[in-house]
Length: 596
Image 1 (cartoon, rainbow, N blue to C red):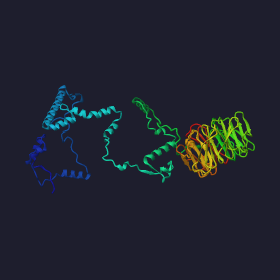
Image 2: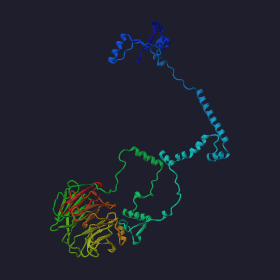
Image 3: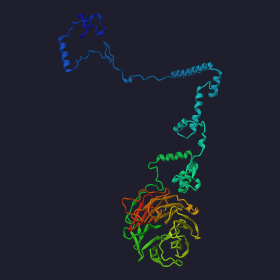
Image 4: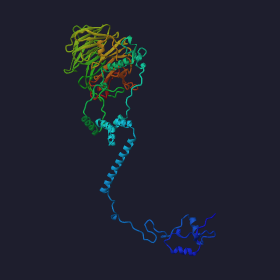
């Protein structure tokens, strides 16, 4: 059905609508409007609507057809302009009377609450009121007192405590510790741990009766082993030492910390294990190359000098700078292939021995003279090869044949006395205080001698060794390392070597498979260098006190080390040098140590 537009029925009604301009169209009487089915749109308006539909535009309205209601103008009224901002009145402030009214309202509310509470308490039985007084106290007149009483202890605890708000909240939320409902008797029974069937626990057994240990005893034994390996309780493990400082000092330290920028974590002074930071330097004897085997490499005890000696009959001194290592001097000994060369303790002399000679050469570095010692009175050795110089510079120890050890005075080169062991002397060394001598025999035993009385203090078998090859002691007097022909290096505690007849090694280093011919501790007793001259690249650096091998040395891919015959560390462990059979004295810079 098509809808038609409503139009006035006659021209009289339209004239009436025009006579009253202020009257709305809706105010026209309803009876004057009629529905007509034959009403049609004028032709002019019909054409205008068709054009608008084709173009898609809406018909425009004539301006001024509707009054401006937003401006506040009504029918027949001019539009009103808003008042300027300067003529607007500010909002009125609350007066003293309003404040008094608010206070009176609050007081009235409090009285109503009090009256309601009293009304409720009248209906409570006496028993309930008594219980409330016991729990909350007598707070009939003031409910705020009850709130303060309930909140008071917690607030006081926060004021007394120096903790932060987060910590106090965590303490308040922490549940109280509950007692167990029952105790199981089986829990009190100690569970025994088998010590025989575990290869690590078996080494901790002191006797055969300790085949089984309780968990508590095993814990104590592990603690003892750890302290034994570390040489005591480490500082970080001591729980008795606590820093006592006042709150003011701690606040000042915190302020100083917040006022600085940079690295707050400093480098540790102890050597870390795992990877040793080092750099390959120029060969120590690069300015005097040779193809003969290097038999001795040693750093000067006080000067930045390294000595290199070999089978080419020469002892050479080089200045250590890590770049060119310029040569200082070379001493040639005719028909004297050097077996061993060594500095004296004060660094003023150089001692050298040969493979097939009983002559001991002494080179005075201050005077520049070479002094041969052809014969020592009382010494009946036909060949003088291996020797050791005491750390204090007082004694010279010569390893003889048939198990003899000869003690000489370093200053006069005269014989003081001799010591005899069973079997052949494989290696010997002085203790760090020069009061004892450790000698390793060919049958796997180690002898400990007193230098002053020349008496044997102790004798024990190196565990697992059939034939000893090398021995060394640490500078701090803590460790003794023994190398055997099977490639095992046992590290002992010096105290156990002096007191026990069958001491247990702290650690057995099994990284070599051939006989260990060289052992050297660094001056800080943090590195033990072990090497075998019977196999290429057979050299390792062991970290102490963990007794673990550094994984980045040697570099297997380069294979430039070859057979190692001698090793040494500089006085402050800044450099590490070793000599091989190709005539090269390889030198490395250890970055952990800042000085030479």
